[in-house]
Image 1 (cartoon, rainbow, N blue to C red):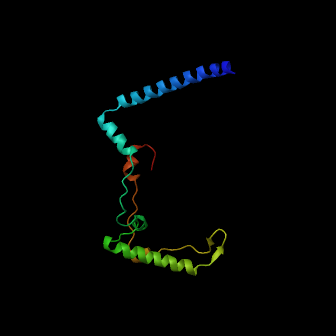
Image 2 (cartoon, one colour):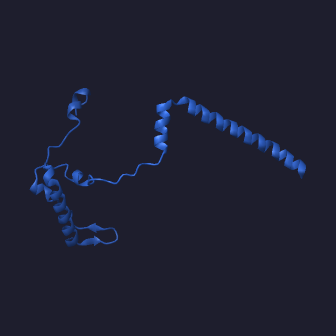
Image 3 (cartoon, rainbow, N blue to C red):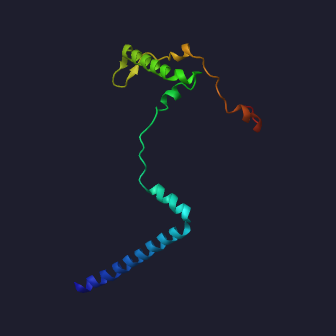
Length: 135
């Protein structure tokens, strides 16, 4: 039994030493490859994030209003009225299939009636002359 342990101990010890040497080599090469600014940036990324409280509102309202020419002062009121209109529509609309949530009607936004639509932006127009194929 002791001969077997001796045969197992030697390769395992050799493997542990080789692993330690490889780990020290890789770590030292990584450390030498970075300058002070890179090491500082890495320490900032690996540290705990600063948890500042969220300030302001989220951007969902602004995304919803992106297609309409609405003054910034009127945006909150427009979002609030749209949310209220949607909630009223949801309450009044019968559900065709309760399992999937399918409805028989589609919601139409009231923003179209109150605010003018912005012109559609096309990213292809300036690029039409770059290619031979027609846009």
